[in-house]
Image 1 (cartoon, rainbow, N blue to C red):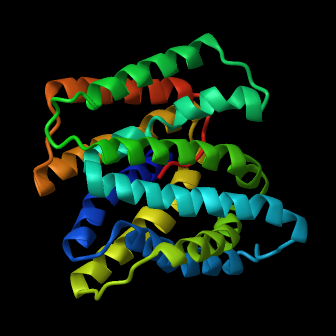
Image 2: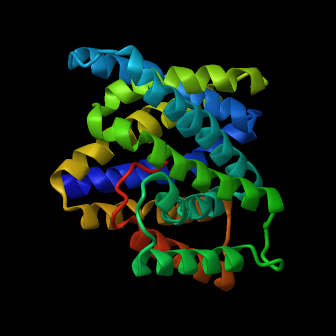
Length: 281
């Protein structure tokens, strides 16, 4: 069951890009998609926490929940949607996996952890991978896609570093019950709302129900049942799912050079992630 839960989480996260592209095609803007992804997922986490009698709150927890919401929802969700819009679903998912590199670089300053040889190697592999996927000759390459993709990876790294205490000390439904409103309210001033077709609402609901609430729930269910190393490797199937679905649905392609770069980034993510078991997208 642990393997199935982790595979399900990776698949749902991998579908964020392709399904978001459907929302864009229906006339929605990236930050609008990020906003509704969070807004529609919020009642699910709230109901889950209430059902399990976990809706407790202490004022001092604001120091954890508010930064977690601002970084993990506002910045992360927004940057990831912008990366999908300008770089495509496959490239966005690949660049998201630079997060362990950012964690490795920031950990000595934030957590007091030294940069070990395996983490240093992970940084080197990922940086080389970024150079290859952003090669000027790559088809469909857009500088904003690269920039927002790296920002998504960076913000996810902060998401982990800031949220580590919350994720370890509090149940996941409780964390998101308080972090999501902070992110939603901060995103709101930047959202331009558009008329929505039934297809657009379907895409938004899928992102909220399956790629947010469902994926996080499955991920942590799998993490409780699997060794951390297995969980990390299974979770890195996410960019593979994104690239495969984007290829067949949206005709996105990666050249041989970009594919090699993607493989190096994922290898770096696995190596750097062996001691970083935070959730992903």
